[in-house]
Length: 431
Ligand SMILES: Nc1nc2c(ncn2[C@@H]2O[C@H](COP(=O)(O)OP(=O)(O)OP(=O)(O)O)[C@@H](O)[C@H]2O)c(=O)[nH]1
Image (cartoon, rainbow, N blue to C red):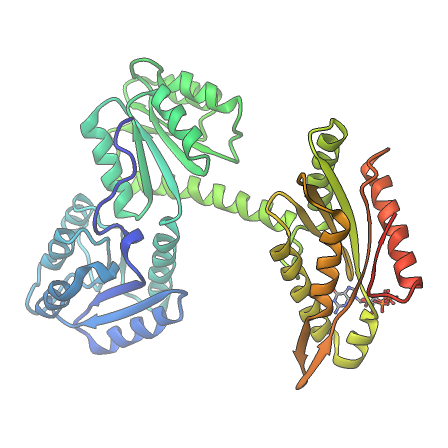
């Protein structure tokens, strides 16, 4: 396989914290920038006022810096020399400067500066902060580059690395598919069209049989001299197209638009499956997962037990200690259920103060003991509120009878919960 992950020593994955080096000769601007970035999640700053000071900090330990924000015009380096200094240490550079002519702009772009902003007011500082946040986030984003030219592959990788993306590379479609199988969380594939073994169009067609445009973005890349190609790539399933040769600025606009779209869809999906209070699966998602376990159990692949867990006298917790305290109690119980059960089991918030658990039973598992352990653990929990330790308890109904639908199984477990409540609560009843 061609060039796996980039393991550049200065890759942000190896830096322990997100420290930003600021090089700015105006003390007021430096402090304003630093104070603002401190508010940005994860980002500490080291302030320097000249080329010499920046050089000293880098010599001391350059690996702590994941990005630098630079002024181009420093008293001891008036022509942007500080950009070269940072690039020697492979640290991504954002320029925040008082003025910029066309020549300087070209110079910066040729040196792979991440972005540049002209100082006008606080608005630019906000934009710098947003760019830093994006770079910090990019460390988690995998981009696969597919091209048969080794030099072009490494050029693309170095461009992407300057934006802190994680990169992988393949020299044809077949290798790309192997890498995709190995790393299913790849967000974006940038592929050339003309390649041996499997070309870019065949690759896109194959990928689209399994991955939709909103799950995995693809940018097709080819010669600007083939006018019909962009449409063909888009029709085959590419999200976007870029013509070679291209400007780094355009390349990054397209890359970030596509990776942002994938992130956004992933966040929406995540939000749609999670219960907003407890963070465990919501009812709809838990039922979806449970349907599949139930179907497999009916086919005889394994045995399952389905339990409904209802918090006892929960109204009293709310009435005595307030709704927020009640919320805390629900979070504690959800976390405990999640921790107690195996990854192959399902835990979800069914509604209000009721949880659903579907447990895959291994050969020696006793369903009654599994739910008894849950009940006993919760009965041993006290949550602290208003200076008091409030005891918690749950009633559990469960069943291992698979017959009929999943909803019928839930109804059986539910009726066992009612029996447990009637029998005095804080107990486990089997249907
Ligand atoms: N704090 C909080 N309370 C909730 C939430 N969802 C439901 N509840 C409360 O849970 C309580 C459930 O009360 P009941 O159905 O009377 O049951 P209970 O008090 O637990 O009594 P038993 O089930 O009979 O032991 C109600 O007061 C609901 O307002 C929530 O998300 N947060």
